[in-house]
Length: 316
Image (cartoon, rainbow, N blue to C red; front, side):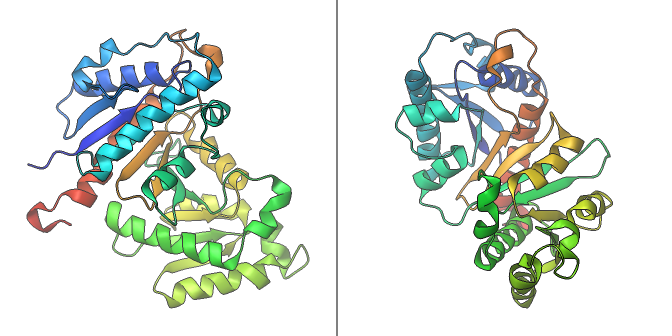
């Protein structure tokens, strides 16, 4: 029977990553799972899920540069193992972006770092909650990620929307086993611009992008106003929503899934997931950190790795 191997990195050692990983792995190790998890440490050594209690969760005195270097080395070693085919997926605990940059990585975050390490393009940031506070799943692809709001309109190009929409369609077919995913493109302007009253991006950029995606065989509606598209997705009308910018997608996503959402990187040669929270330095080491999102990240990584790599019984 196929059992995927999943690498787990601990993120910034001063944050809550090590402790939520420790608790999540311990919880999963107590049950008969269908994946093998290995913690990849900065020195290249590994710990099994059963050895999770040995994870050091109190390394608080490191400088930004040292902490960023430790976090980066773990990711580099996990990615190297995945590129060699040893790991089928990588689950990354949160790191501190300024520390990563202090360690010499001039990237906005882990998504861009993984894209660089794997020479992957395009990649996408999908926020995924297979179960929400309303019960139904919500999957939101951020067509643009960490940008100042004033820079968003120029970044939301037709080419970008088509690229990300096609990537989402392909990923849902391969890793979620959806035969014909139903997508929605969230509008940029209020009320999808109301026929041009509040901007022209819908008519000039988004509608032609939707037409191009549809011509390529992608089932996508839109642009759909932001004040209705997420409710429609949660009602089961869409399998995923393409959000034009970070906060319009994340506000809706975290409202219904805070603490249990998962960040999935699309477009890599292996599965990558991460919990949807940050390092939370203020509560690190207090025992108050919630491991729920890490449990979901580990569980989803195993599920997607099975879908992508299990070639038995006719699966691809």
